[in-house]
Image (cartoon, rainbow, N blue to C red):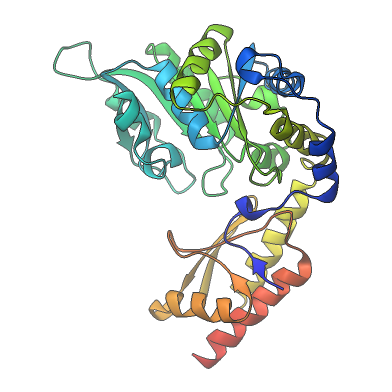
Length: 336
């Protein structure tokens, strides 16, 4: 049996979730009459204290809808140099929205220094793109951004006339790890996107939430991006099931990540960054990471090495799988 630690996107719908999908009442969501989609949108909006919400096919689509709804052609978004919406979403804001990203260096915890944010806001001058939006990400590489920082960063942005967006692809991990109330955690953000196809285990889908007029604009953008789905209640039902059954259990993923981190850290030649949530990063001495990944794969353990050796725990990983990953790593490091 494969232990797949590449990402929490590899989770498969549980039998109970599949049953919820099969039972879903559906309609045509482009006409706005899919009751299950509407129920999901209303629930997420209420959960995060926003006026309205929009079901989208992916986190990438949700972020792009947000950026193109907050910004016009020639506007600029301040974003982290390693943020997902800047680095890993195909340049969509620039390519499709004519929105210029202004990347800023991120600290080890994923934050952007307040001084860097302030310095990057352009004056109202024809030589510059119009700075309109600050986009942050929580969690970032599994790190939970502190509430005090989020309050300070969004207050700064608003004081300078900027809107704020939160890429909350793994926001439920942050909620569980911090114990924060969802609406309080995102209070400083004009919009927030949350993903259901990662740790929550749904097969497809994210939700973008914000003011009613903003969501109306985002709905138009979603249509232009080809994201107007018809009987999408089949997918929304999985997300609703995840909200009911898979949020609190994220704590189990976090505990398994700690178990994995502790086990790897005990192996000579492996340096581990202590995880906040469900993502474990490790460095392998002697430039052996690629060889280790190949060894793990031979032993039925999958991980990634794109941004350092990365292991992600999730719904389809248990303690036995984590221990198997540790044992395989130890075996490689002992012989190499």
